[in-house]
Length: 198
Image (tube, rainbow, N blue to C red):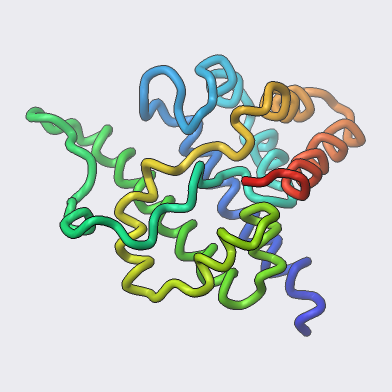
C-alpha cells in the first residue's frame, strides 16, 4: 500500500496545494510583484481559463515554496501578532485575501512538517535537496511549528520565481494545444527541484 501512496494521495495533495496557490496568484493581493512573480506573469495567469489553470496545477511538485523555511524559534511576542495590519479603514476584500494567504501559508508549513516527519525523501522533493531544511522541520515540535506559522506568510513565494523562464514557460505551455510541450514544461519543474539548493 505504501508503494502507491506517492502516486495517489501525495499527488492529489500536491495538486490541491498548487490549485489553491494559483488562485492566490490570480487575486490582486499586493501591488507590483506578488509572491515573487512579476505583474505581467500574474496578469497572464489571470487570463487563463479554469482548465488551463488546472493543467498548471497538475505539475507533479509544489508550485509554492518558502524563500527560507520560517524560523522555528521566533523572538518572544512574535507569535502573538494577530496578522498583517490592514490599516485604519478596514477593507473586507483585502482582509479576506490576507486571511486566505495566511491560512494557505500555515497549511503548507504544517503539511511540509507532517511530510518531513513521515517520509524525508518525499519532503526533500517538496523542499529541495539538502538535509538541513527537512531535518529542521522533522525535528520541530508542534509548538515550534505554531510559532513559525506566524512568520510563514512573509516567506511564501512562487517556487523558482527568480528563474527567468519557468513561469512564463508554464503559462505559454498551457496556452498551446501541444500536450508534449506541457508535459516537458511541467517535468522541468521536477528537474529544477532535484538540482536546486532551496
